[in-house]
Structures are given as structure tokens and as C-alpha cells.
Length: 261
Length: 307
Image (cartoon, rainbow over all chains, first blue to last red; front, side, top):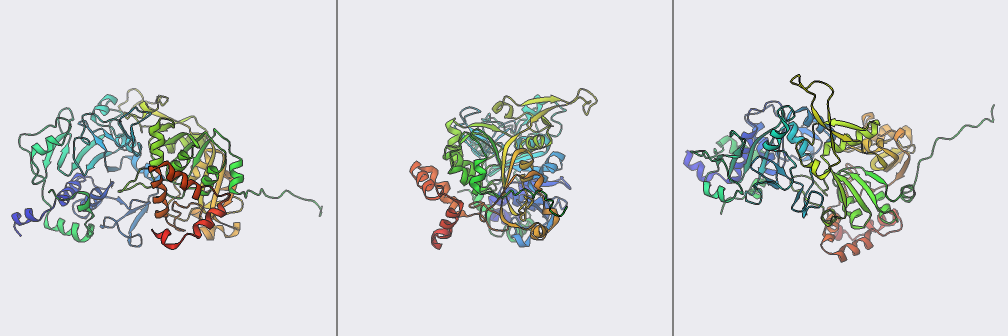
């Protein structure tokens, strides 16, 4: 199969899954803890390919060895019992890279999942709450996955800082923030990082078919844009096989990120 | 002396309403489980039909928070999240959201781990526990009373000690948890995937109440639990015990039963219209006893239960 054929066949959700997998590249023997459909699929892909030593959850109380994104209860290969409370031992040890969602994320990598508008004590729209975001971001490498990139998600300043970004980390100073790292933001349009002198969000790559104008339009702040913006890499034939036959045969990833119209 | 008599062991068995009679309005109550998992719902239902009010609930929140809020029982909530389920398809709790957005519900928002530390500090009778968690986030904005503490030991660079969050102890007036099996003295076990924070809630509380799917004689408890490592609640930390089969309904109580999705969906739908909530409360939360509630559940037509 030639590269051209593959480009025609490849679907946006698969590119996202591969971009997520690459986020965990180099992590070694830590807990890869992606939360969400494609995030989990991408994490499983990382382990099934380049990062065989990663540990991953079943979303409940087990760390499992399965490649399937959501194996049936009876099929789970449990490596260790990891009940809710045990998770804090892992989070606070630093042996973890979490990928969370974000209702809002800003140019410094601050994340909000708690509330929109209003005041800190009376949000106009109450969301989930802080959950574990403060503890995740001060202790562990953190990435975000956003399935629908838009200016209401990529905002200049989040309404509530649940997960802390680079400006907050800088205010804390090098000692308090020594475990802080926001590695990537993967969206349905591209991959973003903070590898700029002042740690502002930068376009790392655009998914095939996405233009820089499209991303600028969908982002509520000024992105750092390199002179030559790479295109996100395509899945290899083996990665595509793993995705479609082993990790997500039901195709749940296409529901989270449909192909562009 | 052959006619010498000795005291009997404490009998801790209570009904749901007897537990509620020991609670008071305005008190701080910790509720076990998390999200829509193993919530002590039979005890929550007893609170809902009582005249208790102005409660401060501390919990890894699920539908019990929304029900108590919608029924006007809640004055304050300490939480890290409230969700009838948490996961890829996280659903938000509409009754909780309405209460929160009204500004009438006083809230202490925390990171999940800070809630753990606050309960642990109370259980260990220390005023706070230090943590890195919360530094740099807006938790200090939503809770201006949250303080930091400076380590008296040198920092990792040999310089000044690190500044950390001082998570204050969260003392509970009472804790309510639901477990799978217990003996009649208050020793209890979880047989599902996770104990969650139930033991810690009990240890952080002045009054400690356990409901359980079934009660067995002490001699049969380890066998019923499956393994001694599951005997995680000791009668040291239990004052009252309620036998409550199906007591976590509509939340899950693995491996005894899963969540009643249809029932929960109906409940969540009642936030759209006060009339729907009133009808739901009247239909399902106004029985005089838990037994009547369970009988009404059992009498549901199968198609309704499945819809």
C-alpha cells in the first residue's frame, strides 16, 4: 500500500489516536492515565507499540494489561489492584502521566472543569468540580484532549483554574512547581505544546486537511505558530490494524471525533 | 459465683429512622461511596422523609447530593465533584447544579485528594495535613480560608522550607456508609471492587453508622466476605448498624447489583420541571418506611423497570 493510498483511507479519529499515543512516547514504566474515549484508545496504542512498559487502568479499580480500550469485566488481565484511594499514592509519587479533558484551556495551559461565568462561589454554570485536577497538575506530567476545538474551549483566560498552567507554575517558583509539566494538548484539529520561551501554547502539528487559518479561527487567543507547521503523522499500517481490530473494533473513536464534512 | 452475671455485648442494630433520630439539623454528615456507587441510599431516604434540615454534607458526590439539595435539606456541601457517574460519558448532576448556581448552597470545593487528607487528619486527630495539592490553583479563591504552611525543614535545594497547602481536618458529626455484609456487632466488609473512602469517613466521625446488604453471625463474616483482607470496617468505628437489602438503590452495590439506570434517568429528568420533581418525590421518596419503598420497587411492571 502506498502512502497516498493510506492518506485517502485515514480518518481524523485515527490521527488523533496516534497523536495521543505519541504524547506518551518516552514515558517508560509509569501509569499512563488517559481519561476519555480517544485518550484511552491512544494510550492503549502507545502501550501496544512503542511503550510496552506503561501501566494503564480499567477505569475502575484495576491496572490491566489488555490492549482493548474497554475489555469486558471477565476478560480483564489485572496486573494490580488499584482502588480509588491507592490512586493518590500513584499521583503523588509522580509516576504518572495523565491526559484529562478540558471544558476550557488557555494559552498558558490552565484548565477548567469546575464552572463557567459568575463568581468563584456562585458559578453561572456549574460543571463537574475540581476533581483531581489541582493535584494532577502539581504532581504529574499532564496532557489534555479536546474533541471539539473551538474558541469557547481555547480561551484567553479560563474562568476557574482547576489544572494549573505555566503562568501559575512560574508564580509558584521552581521548587513548588518542580513536578509540573503540561506536555501536549491534542485536539480534533491538531497537536499543541508549550515549547516556547515563555511556555505559551504553540502549534506543534496540524492534522491532515486542517489549515492554519482554521485553527486560528477556532482558537480564542494568539497561538505561537512556527514558520513551517508540520502535518500530524499518519498511523502506520500496523497501528491502523491495532486500532481497528484490537483496541477499538467497535469504532467508538469515530463518534467522539467524526470525520470533517 | 454461678449466679454472677456479666454485661451483654452492645446491640447496635437500628432501623433507618432510628439512625436519623440520632442526627440533628445543622450537623456535618459524611456520606460514603462515590459518584453513583454504593451510596447509603436507604439512610438518605430516611433523611429525606425526616424533618432534618440545614445539613452540611461531605462526600464524593453522587445522586444523593442532588436529592438532598432538591428536597431543601442541604445548607452546605464539601465536595471535589458531584456526578451520578464519572467517566468518558460524565453526566452532570442537574439538581446539584441548580442548587449551586442559585448561590444558596454554601460550598467548600476541594481536590479529591484534599478531601481524603481532610478526613485522614480528622481520623488521626491532627489539625491539618500538608500537601502540594492545590498550590497554584483557584481553590484558594473559592475557599479563602484555605491556608498554607511552611516546612520547618530545608527545601530540596537546601534553602528555605517548602510552602505547602495545610489541608484542615474535616470533622464529621456523623458518617453514613453502605457495605455488602456485616455482622451484628458492626464489623463489615466490602465484596465489590473498591472500599472507596468508607472506613475513613467512619473514622473521621463522632457518630458512625453502617448499613449493609445482609447481616451474618460473626463466625460467618470472613467466609461471607470471601477473604479476611475485605474485613475493612471494624466495630471499633461503628455505633449503629442497619440491615438494608438493596439499600444502595438506585446506585450500584457490586457485586450484589448494578446501578438502576432507568430509575436514575427518571430521577435526573426531574430537574427539568419542579412539577416532575414534586411528583418523583411524592412517588418514590415519601414512603413511611424503607420496606415500603422496596416493595414499590419490586412491584414495578417489568417493562417500566427496563425502559
